[in-house]
Length: 185
Figure 1: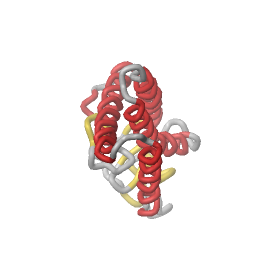
Figure 2 (figure 1 turned 135 degrees about the vertical axis):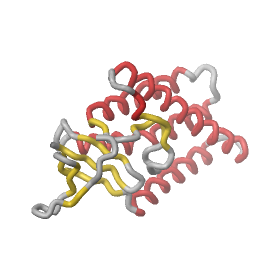
Figure 3 (figure 1 turned 120 degrees about the vertical axis):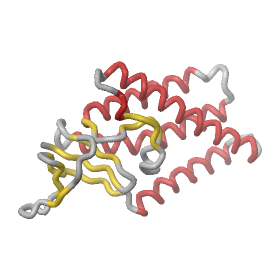
Figure 4 (figure 1 turned 180 degrees about the vertical axis):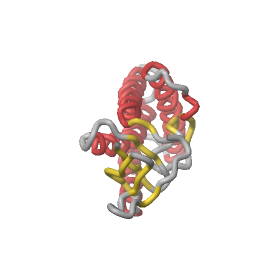
């Protein structure tokens, strides 16, 4: 379905992608994005408040945590995709322009929800395990920063995909900068 175009059907006024019909759309509203960012700020404020670190050390931990988590998430997604799917992986790559909810190693084109959900679950749990395995060697503040950033990135993705998956399990997901669209045949 690479390069497909959406069109309006005159009879039902539903978006169609060839034989696929739009079943669910998650638009990234300004309220949703600002709530997501507010959650991040409140979480970071709590980490700073309860941390014995100075503001500069906290900012270094924050930057390190974001970079480390995105690197781990992308690596795990790549490996999980290699293990799960036999398809060519040209359709996947590093995406930063999709939305605040979708950053990292992601599909560049439409993808089956089962594959995307499987990769996201692998990514969530393996990275969580990897972060906890760093416990003996990493400062507690950096570990907490990594855990918070990882959950902050992962949970909205999983929630959106599960909400789509419960409608029908055989659909196609399209990620864009404005929404997540779920199509079924």
